[in-house]
Amino acid sequence: MAMQLAVDVFSLTENLPRKEDYGLTSQIRRSSLSISDNIAEGFGRQHNADKIKFYIYSRGSANETKSQLIFGNRVGYFKEDKVSDLTENINKVIESLNKIIKTLGKD
Image (cartoon, rainbow, N blue to C red; front, side):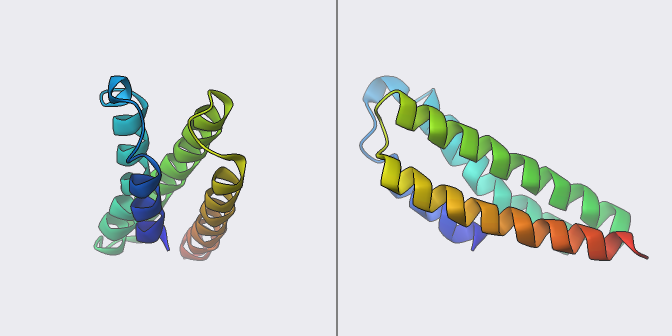
C-alpha cells in the first residue's frame, strides 16, 4: 500500500511545472517513497526498538506527504478529488503503522 502511494504521487507530479523540479516535485516524491523505504528498513531490523524507530519515521514521512498534497491543492497544482483519495490511502497506512508500533511496543 505504501509503495503504491509513491507510484501514485509520482504519476500525480508528472505534469507539475518545470520550476517545481527542485521544489515540490522533488520533495513530495522523496517523502512519499520514504514511507515504504522506512517500512522496509524497519522490517529488516532485528530488535523491536529499531523496528519501531523506522516505523515512526515512516509515519512522519506519511504526514509530510499529506501536507505537501494539501499545499499542492491550495496552490492549484492538484485536484481536490485526487488529493482526497491519496490522503485517505495515507491515513490507512498511518493506521496500519500505528497498530504495528503499538504491537511491537508491548514486548
